[in-house]
Amino acid sequence: MQVYLYDDGLPPQAAAIRRAVFMDEQGFRDEFDEIDPRASHLVLCDREVPIAAGRFYRAPGCDTYLVGRIAVVKAYRGKGVGAALLRAAERAVRQRQGRRIALHAQVQARPFYEKLGYTAYGAVELEEHCPHIWMEKAL
Image 1 (cartoon, rainbow, N blue to C red):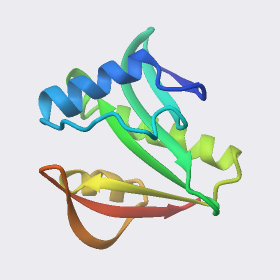
Image 2: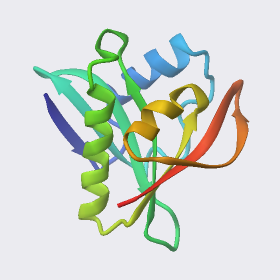
Image 3: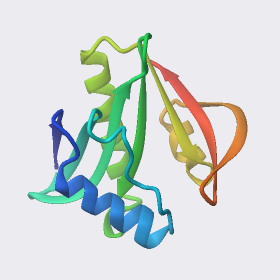
Image 4: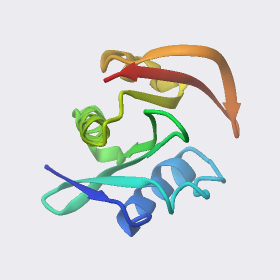
């Protein structure tokens, strides 16, 4: 598997994966936002076939990066692909001197992030129709 990093806007491969996972499967409507053009995007491929995507960007005025929109196509879930993508994001953030990652996780994905060293903080909030919780990890 190969991870590709894009710093020049949302690549079409990432958009297609996010549309399939978040909009078609999960029913989100507001998937794409004003952050996409300025975020860095990751696309993980299996033999050149895009199978996972995510994004990260620096929070204004600090050394924290926000990671989000982690999506894995259905056929590759449960195979370590999401963890590989998140580790790639962590490496990229470290290379940019980031010291902390925060993310707004779907509550159902909380155990996945906890296994990778993330800790929940704050109250559960609804994002569209789905409960989310803030999580963080020091790098």
